[in-house]
Image (cartoon, rainbow, N blue to C red; front, side, top):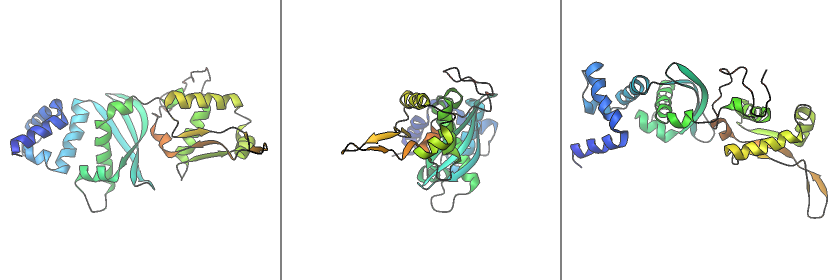
Length: 244
């Protein structure tokens, strides 16, 4: 493949708007750089991406914290917004290879700065997907509870046993709340990340046994919503429940 063919492939991959913006970036901000020094240098490319997302797309991405999970991916708490308007926080998840390929650091330990810069670029590139996530302020109090449980758990899991339900939750939530949660699971496509179990089940020999769990929430639940509660202190749940 000739250099012109390779440039044309890169141009197609990144899109016409971003490709044209490289000239502006060089002419206005970095006349000391050439095109090849941007598209083939990881650090220069990330700097260009950050400029493009902020100045051209007017997208604001602020990576507050990054951590590695037990599943060989990195997750980050990220503030996202458009222009001057902050939309809330999302949890972004990317595998290590994706981050290493973007930073160009294939073998050495990844620094916090490398992680934050790479994730900021990845989130900005997929900004429309993140901004389209449902807002956590709009869901039921019980789903908020499960979401927060997952977020705050060291294991990134929510396990509410039948005993837990009776002792801690039944005073505040009813069977109708469980029914509402099941409806929300379908509405938001959460079947793989939240499970609701009946309080009792019947064995093959017709014995009534209390199930061990009422609700299980899995780690990816935290990636399915925008947490906008700090922006909407008096937002009403769709059923009419008002957050105080």
